[in-house]
Length: 448
Image (cartoon, rainbow, N blue to C red; front, side, top):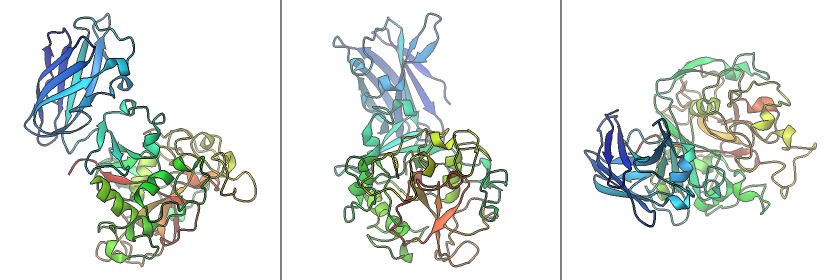
């Protein structure tokens, strides 16, 4: 990190710039912060050397002279050359404190703006992607933490209807243990044998599973596939009854189209192909190692993703707080709930339960989530690689013919043991009549 640049403005506020160095280093200079009589704050700066994603913080000092942020919720309504990729040159940010920071008072020299330039291969932790019908490619916004998301991650329903929120997962070169030991209840050691994995890339992953309204915005040729379609609740319920193939390999069909198997790009008419066209972002399904690393959130064997203990393979008091499964409303009787049921039963509105330690919701329960990989019992020698043979994508890495694709995370009508981070399910990639299969998306961590 380069030395910060400070400048005292005429208004007595302090401007402060940070450059995060990785590869080509953007330079932020000439930062000036001022406030007009109508209380509108203007922050001007110059970005040189390289384009960057720019974020903003505002800090005040206390009686001891220590600086502290006023909080992302108070700053997130800033507009102009901020929260996005910014080209080099003279730039301006405007911020109206009265809209998000009521009754603010700033003494002379009592506040400073912190302008941060992120290199394009080291973008901020949160990315918000507009997927509405009017969305334009490559207009995503970036925020340094969840506290900066306008309206709040759960308070702004756009994040579960017309936008997709992505969380950066710092996985590159971190060794971790995939799978589980027999210490975890309901362990299936034929599919969960522990092994060390070191992933080669960081990535973004969806904070929520894809919802019914998000699906409908993209796959307009089959906008309402889900069984649980009560109009009062369906918008933010996870989409289900969608096949792996129609998500990635086929244009509104269930048959496998090997021309679009990973590592090839998705079929342009598939959900992921259409999503890529609308956003300009390389969205895909996660590999199962990517999925498990994110779901574990740094918590090891015998732990749920929030760090609480896995207690039981059937009914688990800790899972009651983390996700929808059969014992906390998913399946209250012997039969599956009716299609018209409220979100108190069957699938839950995404975000109903606690997030894991990295802020991801519904990684335990609600719906199984499709992953890219062909299912194979023994993956211990693959080091987290996606289990598809690049030379022949119809086969596994070992050369066996692929037949079922991996699903992760458990489901609303299953026992707690199936929702463990290590549990590996699988199903026919063409099936789309199961009301338990959905998905979340991943993409590259960094701008192309």
